[in-house]
Amino acid sequence: MTRVMATGVFDILHLGHIHFLKEIVHVREELVVVVARDSTAGKRGKTPVFNESARLQLVNELKLVDRAILGHEGDIYSTVEEVKPDIITLGYDQSFDPDDIKRKCSEMGLNVRVVRISRYSNSTYKGSSEIKEKLLQIIEDRI
Image (cartoon, rainbow, N blue to C red; front, side, top):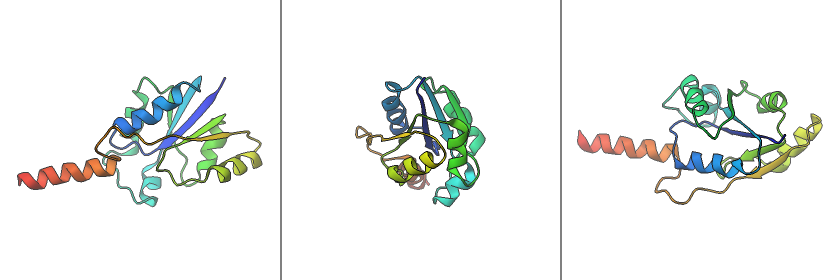
C-alpha cells in the first residue's frame, strides 16, 4: 500500500487545495492529510479564520481524503514518524527542502519520496491569504 502524506493549514478551502489533493490521487492508495495546528500556522505568519478543529473537520469531509489528522505541536517529524508515509507531498508554496526531508526521514529509518505539487493556475487567487484580502476589500468597499 502506498501511503501519501500531505500537509497544510487548509484554512479557507479553495480550488488550489483541491488541485493539490487531486494531483496526489493517482499515486496513492491512502491519503493522510496533516492539518497544521493553530500554533504552527502562527509561527509561519498565518492567522487562520477557522480554528484547527474546524479545519480538521472540513478536510475530513473531502472525498479525496482517506484520513485527516492534526499535526504534532512544533515538530513535523513526530507526525511523519506517526504516519509513516511512502510519499510526502509539498505544495508549490511550501518552503521545505525536499532533500532535507528525505535525509531526516532516512535517519528515522523511513524511505520516503518527496514530491512537489504544481501551482494551480486556473484561479485569480494564489491562496487563502489573497482570498481573505479580497473579502476584506469587499467589506470595506461596502462600509
